[in-house]
Picture 1 (cartoon, rainbow, N blue to C red):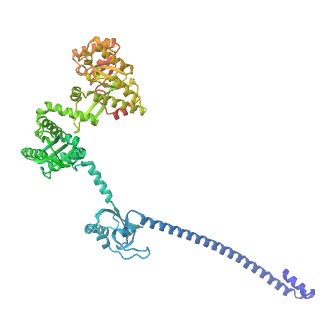
Picture 2: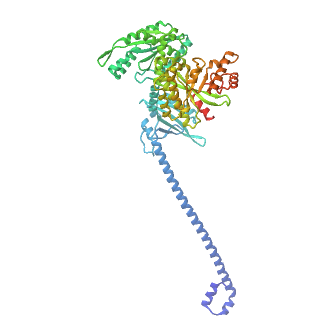
Picture 3: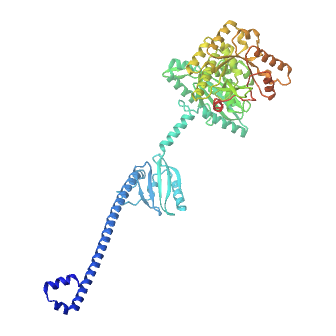
Length: 630
């Protein structure tokens, strides 16, 4: 019987007979109690489950709501950031719908095109007319919108100019969602300052700052095209090199400001004498160049020269003072005087020097006799002085090779000069001139400095150092302070004297033998090796070989080039090698170009050789690569 029913019966009766007689009823009631317990238990369990599930759902809902709130906050933050960036960007941005309606624009676009102001929630109606009315050429810009209509996915780039004079670069890209274009963004960037800067840079690169005339770079380009045009249409081109006589006096007496004013006035006067198609350029200082294109007859060139000379001979009133100058003009003509810009410029320059030498205030046409005349030497001397001032020289290095190991053991530094026109000037031309004019010491000092600087550069790179030979002319050798110059250069660049070799020719020894010996000995005390260059072509006295501190003999290339089958040269080379071996001197053979020469020299104990068979003279960068792999 159910325990609850039993408690209730005992509470109300102690008569067991009644309980016995009513046993069936009581059992039924007990079963009902049991069933109620079971049902209640089921209900309670169900309520527990439902409650737990509701709590879980409620918690999940709260979590989801929190996530949604966080996501909304992030979205709001991102949107605020994007809106701030949208307005803060340096570009004017306009967003269009697929139908061409403006749906968004930033503050810069609003200011640039005069769009109505808005609070960001309700956008006023904006048409393309706002944009078109700000443009210089709205019709041209409208073509881009037509392109977009034809191809909604097209990327558009271009430039347009506004009525305020500013230039804008624009770019338009489609907004793509999936594979569908849902709008289009146009960006406008102000490039006015960039264009102005580019124009200024171009002007500075190609035009003279004082006169506004083309400079040497632009002149070279203009002359190149004039030559091409002349070749195509069988026309002549005249190059006039104009130099102002006595301009320095104006600068010295009235000051550079007055000189600048005069140069501007000179520019104006020359321009009044020529056609618009002609090019007048200023090279610097008081030098001008005029290019006359499409010339049929050189008589017109003479006429223009006369006009310029007359125009420049008139007084220049500067600061209430009258100044007088004259002009010397040299003329070269394409095609008879040259086929290139450099050649025409060089020959016009030479003709100008002849005009100066003939009394100034005149003009001269180039002719072939100039190159062999004193005017050419005057021209070359002036060019050389300019080259020294402007450091137009460069060095190349020819390796010396050990014939036994075939390895590079040293280099010879060789000076190279390309004048302002880019023309190569041979050392055979300018070294004698430098000696005659007293400029050789400056040239030699440049070679010494440049060589030591290059050796230091290789040293700083941690490359193996090999000795470099420097040629010293007889005149330079006799200049005061030669030893001091070498000592100071070694100290300045921190390189050992063993890294330098001095090459002198036999003509040095015509001087006081004792004095020569003293100089050479001092150089050797610095660690510098002494070599006799071009041995066998000059003095070749055994006396100086015996008396002077010499380390190396260099057999002149004239004996080596004609060595094969030339018994005379073979005998000379053989004698020099035997002599050097007996005197314990190192021998270097110059101008080696064949294997037969190498075999001959190797068999007779020649240690070193240089020539095109091994290496041509090399740029410093190529030597660096060679040393890296040494």
